[in-house]
Length: 511
Image 1: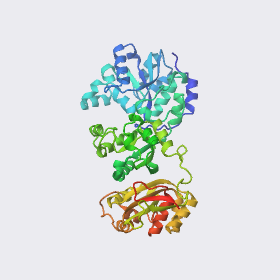
Image 2: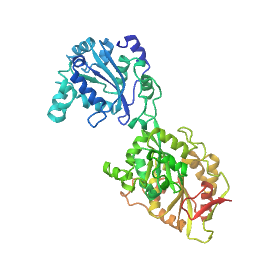
Image 3: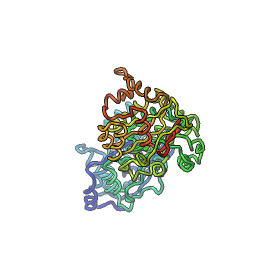
Image 4: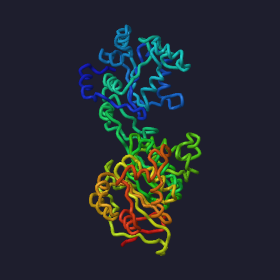
């Protein structure tokens, strides 16, 4: 096969980004080249291929995007591939060896490609790094270059060191028609969106400037609802944004969708029971949240990592505390079913529940006299954007408040004005309308009095949670945590914000 000509190479790299992002957590595309001294050595080539493509514990499990045997290399291609740095006396000899050929080139894709390929090949033979590695690590004798390389010129194999080098090397060696993405996405790749282009090189140019954020769905199941604050701590610690949240009792169809990857196991346990659903957003969100939750079976999760959420809070495969989207395609279906108001990644311009109908709060058993009360707590601005509400939720749960509904969403200007009026706090209109708002309906005996007591409990200096409890959050973010201060305002604001209450002593009824 022929290499890409110099003119074509210059034209194709001219529109490449000057900087390419390279996130080890995501699959990276790299170029691997067997040098002329090893192309005719079947033992060396077989050893490289087995370690590069084997899916077992000793292999990297790389995906093959393209392969090409070149009888010679032009000077522009040899300069892109040469492992000997400029100024080294062996560079000219290395360039000449590469140009004389033949070389065997592979385009591969695997997570953390550049670090793992560097470990597979090892340092250049007889380089200072190789001498230091021999004195420091016993495993250096198992690398491809240690086993089959001779010196910096006859080094057995070459691999890309970063995303920019990989793109330039692939452009120099392969035509667009000689590279292709795998037909099906399996394993870690099933958790990522498909490439933006069917053409590998164009996709690398488009996707390489920054890692895009994607969504995944988390369901905190009924058996773990008391652990919501701890789950939210893991959300914040993992760098996730909560794009939306709501409480619901899954219908049979929703439960079947959430349990489809388990062939329906656990659907009967899930349906009809109050759950909290979070729409989480970050780069590589699906794989990252699955790693945080652990395997579906809590016993297996405990063997893998005892600090995963399912290992800590789950009890069985059907009561495993949390659901996490098992793949990118599944996340899309779950998002469409559970958050239908979202169009792509954009939040709706107004909340679909607030003020949608005239409603009132009534006692479920018809008794007007009861110690139980409901209360609306609204958090907005930096409290939501920086996820500082975690400590407030934790302190409410610690005071035996039951969360009977919640939602994270965006209020329109009209909704913000109406809710601020119901709460009797006109100054809250602007923060409510400016960004996402967490609406929290809580319930317990003597709710109003207990809430005032919670407001008086400040954390000790230098201790506890980084965000503090309810009192600390209210003190730090004045005007961004709102609540009703009378029973009439409490019931009116809850009825305005929610269409139902879950596991509550009260109902939302038409006014």
